Image (cartoon, rainbow, N blue to C red; front, side, top):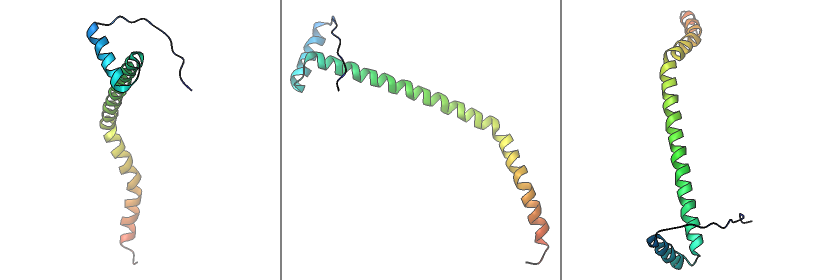
Length: 96
């Protein structure tokens, strides 16, 4: 199913109209289709750039959180393993 199209009027410099006509001829599509393709590509690039900026932001935020919580996590692991280590030490003296 195709998207509904809306007709608009666009003013372009002659150079861009000629370029659109050349591309339309090479691709065997209408000038309107060439312009729609160019706008669609620009939209995709903009969305990709926005997503990349978001990923970089959250990656930095995650790194900051990891650095800030490193000491607490290490202490929690140390405390969690301490009872096991003490049990092993107590059992080391016993015959196996």
